[in-house]
Figure 1 (cartoon, rainbow, N blue to C red):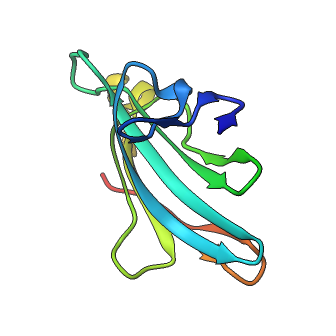
Figure 2 (cartoon, rainbow, N blue to C red):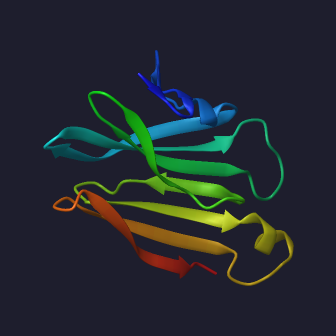
Length: 133
């Protein structure tokens, strides 16, 4: 199966081609039975990077029987990313640092975003965008 970002499946799991050079992990976000589709959160940090803010990115992909498409992507220019799906939840969360704000020593450079799934509408919305500093 292919996505617009390149190969979606490799022998070790779900790794979109746009994540080349990242140490990645993936988790199932949700499953929709009509039509049968899965949402998968893929996140990663840049491999071999140095500095106080290590570059990172995340995306949610919808995988169906005939196509794969990206439905959400993390904000650009972020790092120190932690992206996860809490157990038994209907959401995904990301904690991250805005690199530009951090290196400019501005307040509110670290954030928590929480996205909630609406299974009935087959959609999502951001519930929380909260500074962590």
